[in-house]
Image 1 (tube, rainbow, N blue to C red):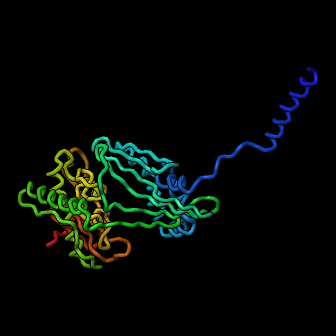
Image 2 (cartoon, rainbow, N blue to C red):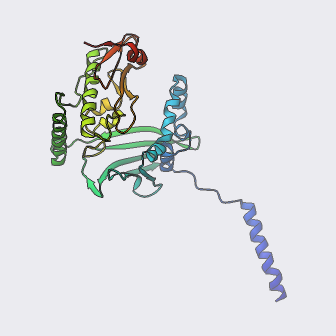
Length: 328
């Protein structure tokens, strides 16, 4: 018994000594999927830039556009501010799930393939929308492949590929187009004397102001229709609300009134934006179109709820709004 009392403490002390020599257990290294999730959805500042390749960051710093990309780090905060539930998953088939309690719409981002090859990993995702718990068939939703590559011990986003499938003979696809066009006609008919809103199919021509003016008119017409269709909201305070991407049913967040390319705010060498729009309902707004950095010497265009398009030769939106000349 005396020997056992001596040996047992010695064994315990030996085990403690060996554990101390090995050091504490370190956390597992970050996976490419975790890095992608952190990059796109973390609320911590600087996480988006952290996962950009060094060559990309260097070029962006020299061009002065680096700060613009820092806004993507706030994506999760913006979604939560808009009252949407938001959740990401580090493992499993679901990468992201977000739901809008007001509209009953839910969007899930599903991992279709995760191909890890040493210091490279290709993560392919798809999108599925739900309305009040029912899956919506949206065959035109894209698939995105994120090419991740290890650089200096950190997973970086090295490549992005987007694939959009358009099944032209699919009954649901044709039905969705038909219903969207009927909805546009019905909404326009509710506004006396207004032109039926159309998808923007104008051919892009460099230096052609007529295309820019036509795009301005498309947005203004869509604004009138939007305000008539959603009187509680008034005018749309963001171009994305006039877009049709994101689901099969139109609502105040996807009114399906203008082409997605125009709703992105960049078209024909111009940057389109809506400002000075607030309230419920919003009764005023400013619409501006200014040349981007590669379109020097072109006019700026502007308008408001009066639907009168004006221009200024200096390419400055403020000048246009203050003293622009009406476009004939």
